[in-house]
Image 1: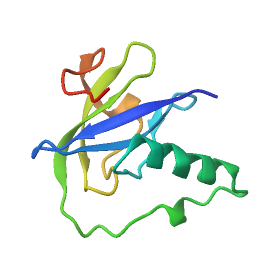
Image 2: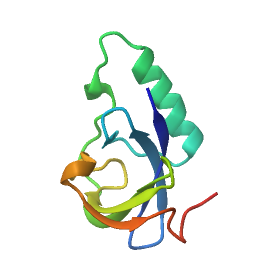
Image 3: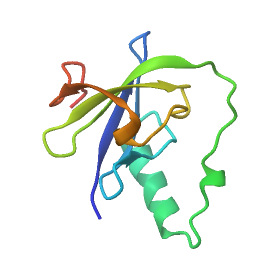
Image 4: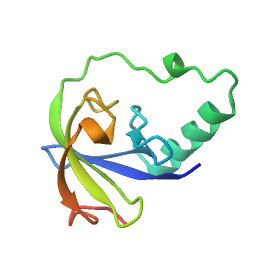
Length: 110
């Protein structure tokens, strides 16, 4: 199983953090204020049996934005998507997303 960091950049410059699941080439939809929060939530989610996505779904109450969604899997990739400040709302399957860059983007927070 392979996982990687994900960062989502909003038009106002806000960066949110998530998880890229390299095993299935999908982003996990919840977004967090820190990478540590994202990984802690992933560990809690992954250790629960059965895994229940409904615990992580948040109300769609904070608007939708066109965002850049990037990951550091391998050399990294960046895609265009849609997200609220709490979750990715567009398709999370990278095979169905529009890829706009290879490697880590300049805005990536180290």
